[in-house]
Image (cartoon, rainbow, N blue to C red):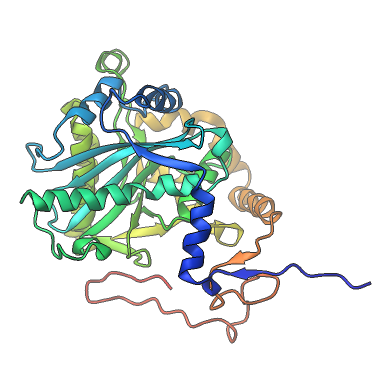
Length: 405
């Protein structure tokens, strides 16, 4: 009996206009809107969606803070010199019903780094009807369009100087970095894996927590914080350095600038005493690296599928909390949840967890792939023998910035 084989598709075979048309058709049923003022009819529903999802865990700014962000003049810098442009993006379907929300801030401070712009991706929430669609990808990347326009506006008002003001295609010569926060990976937390794969496939890396033990401040009401104590959240900070995704490290000075920019954003609604401790911990850790003669901070790659799940090991929540957040009271509930006993009882605990995840992910075969340079076997498998593999070069440049193969 003759059986048919399903045809695989290589993205590099598509003409650029094919890609535009394909994306246009997929996105036609959605529209993205930027809310400019709290009086916008979509504001109430958009804020409530984010608050219901992130508010109870202390990860969402209070309503009055968001309203203030929208009303404030984004061309008036903070005392530190940082310009902040808050954005609240709403995605609606063809009937005008909200299907997704994304918010965050665009951060620029020439005194920290004259050619650096950080797009801080605060929160994203998709309603069930839109999950699994292209909308999630566009909500992740749509702030770039707002950032480029904001940079042009700042330059037009003589507030900043762009390296190449007539070249928007290359973001005016500015280094733009997307930054997002996320829980460290834990096997018993499947949502953390979904988010990690989502951002890993989107070109994001993790700042090595050994040198960057990041904490998100406590966003709860000050009265609640006073009653229960300050409770920052130990998160990993993810970065996508636009156009520099292959680099395996970044300069310490850039890591410091990113940390200061994000914490300037927090300073707009958090009490200083609730920020200084977390900020100082990271900056002192980076300074310690510099004292040791180091100039770079390592970027850890995130997994994208079943073949590279070993990338989860350095961001295993239990391991990270024990090694890099020592004596931090906010880690105790997790460390005392029984995970230590599981790890101690089985030396192959993590390997078994990763094998189970890989098996589950492999159940869904993929028939679209990015390039024949790495994937050209009919079954889509990676080339195995050294003779068949493409050469891999991992070298150190003049600035000690490593490049990923």
